[in-house]
Length: 339
Length: 278
Figure (cartoon, each protein chain N blue to C red):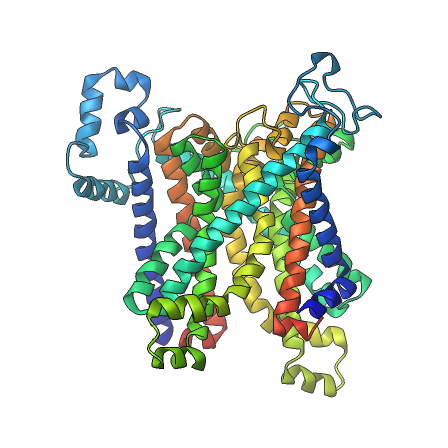
């Protein structure tokens, strides 16, 4: 019962925050200088007075701002995000086309970041202040400080152009046709088709953009794992286990790591949310047809309905991930639930 | 404090390294007209895309401009944008968070929900939208960065103020009849500011990265300004000429690494929990 109450509270909070973000987006759209019909309709649509009149009526542009706000919220609740000026298709369709590509890349990146980050964090904590520790810390600071657009160019230059180890931009090599859409994620869809070479090709296309995306989050996870593990290692129960004669590795793996990883979960969750936001650069450089590339192209052509759609989608993602992490946190660590 | 900093220099090589890198960039930016061998803007198409040589240490770009000179001048924009963003965002965030934390109640609730609304937006996308709405130039880019950055400071400041305001010297000041504004300015803020200062040092690196990211995307200052992010984006079209994007990118990277090393070192020094471990 207590758990249900906790989850209910988090979900209610999610709804309130979503409303807040939608409001912020509305305020931003009101800041766009000039006539909103010009900002939201294509040139061809603007020449047709009927379309302009229909648009004004639909969004209540002749009504007071507060009425416009309620119309906007009503449209959102009906999943109506308007039509993209650039492509002339509903924004929702565009987003659902791009989204799986982004999710595939983000999931791949977060797995790399979590595995390497936790591993580096453990190494760094076990060998505290050794040369190994300093090297791992330098790697994590590098991951946090490297400009992702530059890192992307570097890995493309070395691993694709010079060494030819990994494929270049895009989701699949030209020799393969895109798999039939089931999930929209090429690796999984190729496996469903039973085409292993195609799945491997799609996977190898994920490596370079995935590594670039993972760098920043990996750095954060390494730092968090290290400092939490060090904290836990100085607690009484670890001292007791040590006194019982447990080896250092067994001590860390069996006793310390479980508790040290709880805060790491938050960093992984936040990292996944940030990855989705950081997609813009990586997708643009690696020609990855996801939400980030769509966002960049929309900003360049000042396609406001699409920009707003992307902003809402990414904010929604971020908040849903946060809520899930919060709930998981509460389930794993009862102290959080009580507070 | 001075002794601790001295100890930090001796024991934490990464911190010393960070200070050296940042100092070098600051000096280079100030003395740019003396150090840079060529004009960063004047074009010479006969020297287009020349690889690094004794005359042009970092090679030349697609307009035949000397990349070394452009990198040296570029430090001015990145440093200025990074530092100004942090100072302005830190200033706004400090007062906002201090007021929210000190006043408490519904004021605190409303103020914090507003800042969370901004935080729940991916910062790059929000900065891009603000730039798209306002038009892109150096000033607007910095404005966008400040809008995105201040809520983090506000949240940190609020959390510190919540504990500082329980101190006895605050109660004593209240008992003496000091006004709320006076307590806020003379007691609360000076005693809470240190964590904001540490965060600001680390944040300079982040802001330089954000700034160069926006200019890489074409949302920063206009060409031919020698701005690092924009120079990397010029290099994308000349993929096989590694020096065009390579050196400006290296500049952003070293600057950000330096700022991060300094921030890490200061955090170790001022956080008592970590101090025991290092």
